[in-house]
Image 1 (cartoon, rainbow, N blue to C red):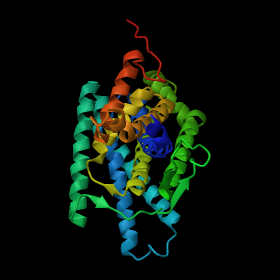
Image 2 (image 1 turned 90 degrees about the vertical axis):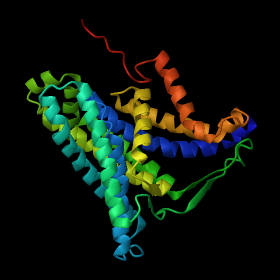
Image 3 (image 1 turned 60 degrees about the vertical axis):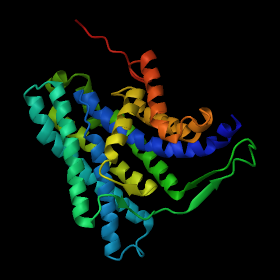
Image 4 (image 1 turned 60 degrees about the horizontal axis):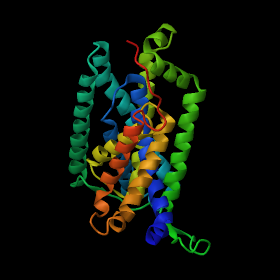
Length: 329
């Protein structure tokens, strides 16, 4: 128990970093589900595409010799803006080409779900082909942008805690993620587009009768969700430094799990679910071997997180922040 307590500060830092990533990607799932009741499994690969776009911007700047002269923060802002714009447009294109024709034909939701899985595979192979063709390797590794290390001295104040160390990228990821989450929450709750999105989510047919352009609202939703996913891909890149075309699959599944944990369709629930899942995963990675006396190592952290999810859904199927819906017969 003493070892678990000693590691808590470092677990908190690492868990928040990963949890912020899960939270923003989970928002993309929950926004689309809230309006279309569609699980867009391609969203994880849009996140992955954002990582590769950010890496492409970084390699382009390096090849042009601007790396030494351009301020690191300026370079980072260019990476995140370009990735957000490209993935946002990509999300709108996917909705227009793949999902809207199905919606016009009143196709079963299962067909749209299968379509999203197909788009996921297409994005993975397309990004792998482009990366392999341009760099000779589909696994991309970049140099860290924010290398300075910081130490929080917990031990001198609380002797039962160890100190926590983190890189400057943790601060960047945390600040940018918090700004994105607060901005999205204000956008949805305060702006006309946000009100229209909530109206369409509540009743699409009635919203259309109230002169709301439903297709445009859905396109805006896909743009915002995909842009946030692409921007988060850049945050993942600068934090961990290595990406491949298949990171979107497992991370997308975990982000979807976070959305379900918080309450699918609830934006604040997705935020909380992502942060909670990141903390649980890092806690398991650091302490599973100690808890199980060596029987299970850190590689079982995913099992630990999903067990927690199952327990939550057994006792609260609608998620932590979701509301039970009553179906009228």
